Image (cartoon, rainbow, N blue to C red):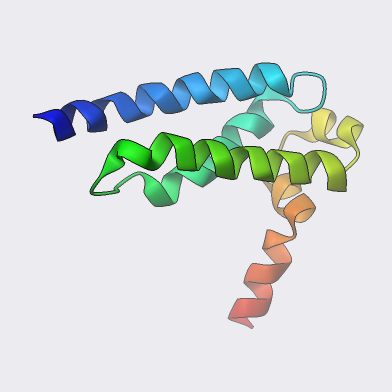
Length: 102
C-alpha cells in the first residue's frame, strides 16, 4: 500500500517542482521551457519500480539542465522561443543524437 501511495504522489510532486522552478527562473526562462526540461528529466524515471527518490533525482537533473541553459544561451532568446528544439540546441543534445545515429 505504501508503494501505491508513493507512486500516486509523484506526479503531484513533479507538478510542484515545475511550479517552483518556473518561479525561480521566471526572469530567465519561459514556463514552457522549464516545463519541458522537467518533463524530459522525469520521463526516463516515470516507470521506476521504487518511486521514492524520483522527485529528488528529477529536481537535481532539472536544475542542472536549467543552469546549463541559462549559461549557454542568451536569456532573451530563451524567453522568446521557449521551444524544445532550442533546449536541445542549447544543451547540445540534438547534435549528439545525430552523431550517435550516423
